[in-house]
Image (tube, rainbow, N blue to C red; front, side, top):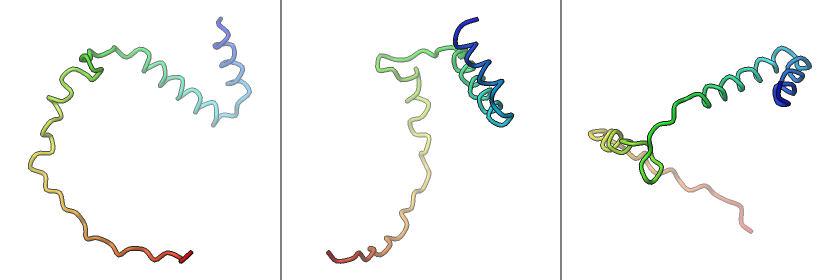
Length: 77
């Protein structure tokens, strides 16, 4: 066993149930991320097709700016 596995095992044995569950969830998420296939990226590091998929996705949406609130009054110096 590697040192990290031994450390994790010892930590989980010492921890209460709530903390052990949190640690387990974090480790499982890290393993999922490590196993995820790497997507192809363009020369700038963006996922291929990112801008083609997102450009114009809010087209037709109406944006309204809310009314300006009054300025807050601050103490004089």
